[in-house]
Image (cartoon, rainbow, N blue to C red):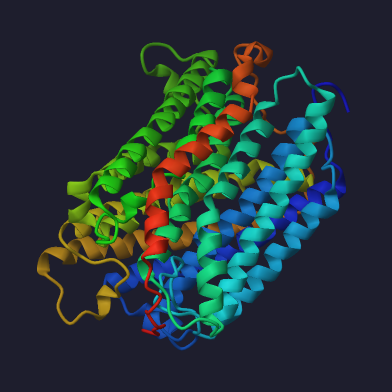
Length: 551
């Protein structure tokens, strides 16, 4: 070990790798259903022929797709990536490795517990699990255990950081560890809503310990968590864009201070925005919807800081590589590196996803797109592209780092990234357009007795995009499996591509490294945004709605 590097032990690499194995397994299964649903929308009957003999209904497949992709793939990947960031960033082992192992096993037990009722068609309630649709109790318990397991791993990070801070009281927290810690703190604040819904309402209800629920209250609990869940997905991608991509591209991070400031703003603003998902809920007063709408617009600000800083860092890299003129630096970026390519293309599509997010936050326009195919079109640009494609790009350097083996078929990886970009562009654009034409979401459109003629061409593009994404997904899985099984070793040990900052991080203002003001601010904002409404909704709740099974 030197002052500038830290060599992870084989045990630490194996532990991180286990997270990624489960994550890749989840997306390889859950990702199968999305393209088949896209083909179903296009009227191609592959779903009935290939999946219905194995699975019980369209909605079982839709639940598997959402749970495995949006919850399991992301949570297992992120906790593994955060483990690496904390260890490598602080340059020290986890303080209580056994604690993080407990968290890992809790997540695994939760995954198995939730998967069994889904596979038995006892929990086809989609990943949002809105009551009064009622799943088997094991599904709710399993989801709870996955979340609790991620909490426990987060506690392991905090204890490690506290020990580091005690030994380094005047040193700025290393950026990658700093951002990882904020991400996990935001996640634990965000999941308090889902915890209340699951522990207080859904689990006792599913066990028969209470007769009914108040669906409005539980929707409020869910969306306390539901929208910041997006930032739990996005912030690890932002970490890579800030802290790894500049060096991979041949440059340096433009501003350490802006990176830290943006993450503090995400901690403040990510959670108190849930009512913008409840614009059509009659139980939420319009004034509170307006408050959350304004806060949703405000959380766009740190994303703009991110866009500015990342592009400035990339321009620095492109010009360092010989780029000239206004835009000549773009061509000098290493587009042939699959890890860099994945993150660049993810960022391009996320630009359009961000614009769609502003539309979703706009009350009047939201009424047009609410519960239409526009919505999955939007979040396939966020979680399925900005997040997933970036995570794939991270794995393209992380797997050789963890295994000491060369990336199998680099050209295949480059092709895979382009296929994902092309497939998602076609698919998402078609979903946006057909949503504007009135096509509903969460609906097997291929089974509808009547489809307007103006939808037909767009639904064909939905299916075409799905086919391309299917090939891309399994090409990614093949590259991952091939990289693990290959006998070709890297010529020299892979060094994590952590970028230096243009300015010494020790010159970063001290107030950007103090936790207390930001945590207090986040708590105050949450109390203001949610306190009065939760008090009112809980005090007036009518726990009378029984459970329904609609599949």
